[in-house]
Amino acid sequence: MKRYICYFLVLFIMHIGTNSFSSNPLIFNIKKYSFSDYHKTTLLPKHGVFSSTSVPQQNNSSISYTSKAIYLNLTPSSSAIVNSDIFNDNTWNVSTGFGVNFEIGYMTKFNKLVGMGFGVGYSSYSTELKSNPLDYNVPDTDVDGDNYSKEIATSEITEETKASYFDIPIFLELSNTNIDKIGFYGRIGVKISLSVSKTFTATGLANYEGYYPQYYVTLYDIEELGFNQSTIYQDTKMSLEPVNVSAVISAGITFPLSSYFILKLGGNANFGLMEISSQKAADYDNTMYDGNYNKLLENPNAKTSTRSYGVEIGLIYNFRLY
Image 1 (cartoon, rainbow, N blue to C red):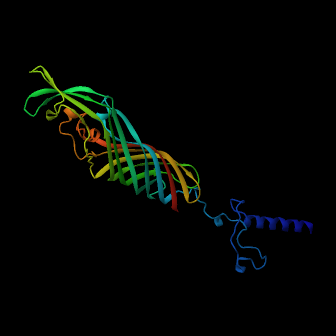
Image 2: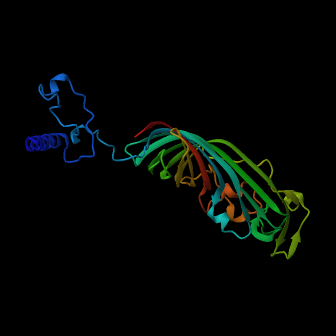
């Protein structure tokens, strides 16, 4: 009798084992059974207790990427109005200005890495020129048609030029910005800028004398001939083109703060592509230091454009994630 009982227990255990375990015995079946799923005689489930087919599919990635977002950028920068001919002239001491560029906009992603965006913003640029006192001469013709050498002695000359713009940036972005770990971003685009303000301040005096080699004589203190001391800048106007276009590049890293906010920190550069001055000096070679005009903007020997390099500090607000 004991032998039959042992045989019965072995067969019973084998039956339960083969119907209760799949190829992965560590995964439990979470399926609920109805009364019809049980054998009438044994009251055991028709299917095993464990089944790999009942396991939910797992997401292969645990990172939640930004899909759509609003961003805010603040960029303290070295912002300048640049003319290469002036910058390479050793007579002028050039100081570029400090500006803060502001931008707010919208960004959307085509996939987890590539996206685009646009926004609105404000930017400002400034450059200061200074020269030491100068003594030089240029050929000229007086009111009577006589040729002479104009002898010019100037005081220190200073010019400060400022311009600000309303910006519309449009860009492509490569990034893995996400709310789970540190990421990166890189942008390239253009910025269309509309002139909103301009300021020009300048100081300087010039004293003029005339040397006539044909008469071996130098004339001075004759106001009718222009041989006197006068102010260089007299009601000097500053003229800008209404629209400027710049190339924009930036790159940096991102730090998730929460499920909604991401901090960004990187570098930013803007390079003006257009001439921003609407006029150039007609007699620049003879008046490059004492002419009654903005030397930086109206130098005809090179393009005058905007440029900035700065540290980009930004905040991203997510309202959709991958």
